[in-house]
Amino acid sequence: MPKKTDYMISRRGFVGGVVGLVGGVIAVVVGLPVIGYIVSPALAKGGEEEWIVLGPASSVPQSVPTPFTYSLVKKVGWKIERINRTVYAVTEDGLDFAVLSDACTHLSCKVTWQEEQDAYVCPCHDGFFDMWGSVISGPPPKPLYRYENKVENEQLMILVEA
Amino acid sequence: MTTRTAQLLDWLDERMGLLAIWDTVFDRKVPKVNWWYTLGSATLFVAIMQAATGIFLSIYYVPTPEEAYNSIEYIMNDVAFGWLVRGMHHWGATLMVLLVFLHMLRVFFYAAYKYPREVTWITGVLLLLVTLGLGFTGYLLPWNQRSYWATAVGSSIVATIPLIGEFLMRVLRGGDDLSFLTLSRFYGVHIWFLPAALFSLIGVHLYLVVRNGISWVPKRGE
Image (cartoon, rainbow over all chains, first blue to last red; front, side, top):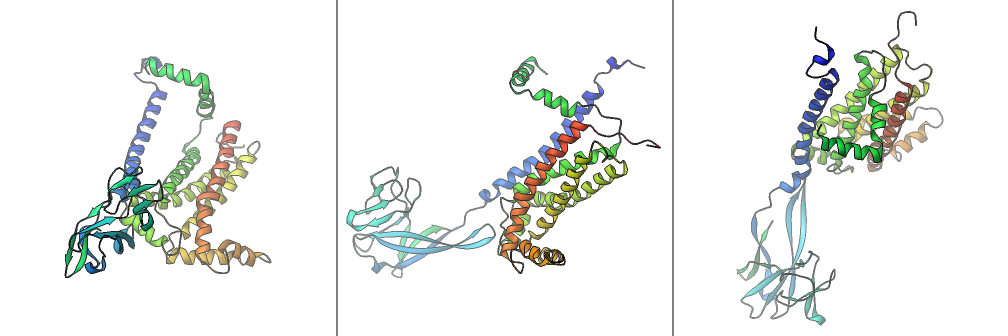
């Protein structure tokens, strides 16, 4: 019969080790899936690109930014939601168009065209863009996003990602 | 343990005095007891599990009649490991009620509720009631046929109390009928009021267990 001190590991040490091991296994088996649980919606794939009709190309007067709204039907979580967005169409000659997103390139607030200031103005941090979306002043780092556009059957269309 | 870690622990202990607490809680003297004495710890473990999984469920669950059921379907079918988190909470609830009862039976049959442990017993009874309350309020949250009618029946039973029953039922339902108000208040009670009560009472309960020590298995004639 070996004496108490002859054991490689004490009873207390053994029990402590087993408890730690089982606890560790539980933590990993439950802890890792839980990370997936939290990030799950962020991994959802974006929709496909599609052409959306804004309206008749002739309704855009020359050199006056004209707002159009379109809505996207998008699956958010378990719901199908309708998301409304605004874009500005600009043309010089009625043939070539620029269609600009109204999302400020600084921190994504909505810009609006202000006739009297001759600029798109972002109310959040005083960002100013000219008619074609270039930055005039303020913190925005880039011009407004330009959608790819085309005119088909006299309808102005843009390519959007659903 | 390396000297570095030992030094770090010493440094921390000198400033926090946590080792004394650790020793008081985990190195206290206990009589030689049996496996029935593990039921309290098992209940505590499940209670913590319920709190953890419940917190995670609240990330996706929406407590409105329009979305409650859909949000749970979403958790079960679309969220990664949502079935695991919801499943643990669902089965943990049943397990916790079971464990609390078995724990109570052990204390009862070993007469461990006697002096000086009466207050431990009383907080234990309150903990049983809070656990049942958590079960009752949680049962409604999926807002499916079963949970809806179970709550209709359960709250109608309250109405049978003489004089104030009718009023208590309307307090419980937040009105005459089951509605979005019922769901909303059951959710609030389920995730805030009762868990706060539960963990406060657990604190008192455990303090008393540590302070008074646990009773031995009674021998013949005791």
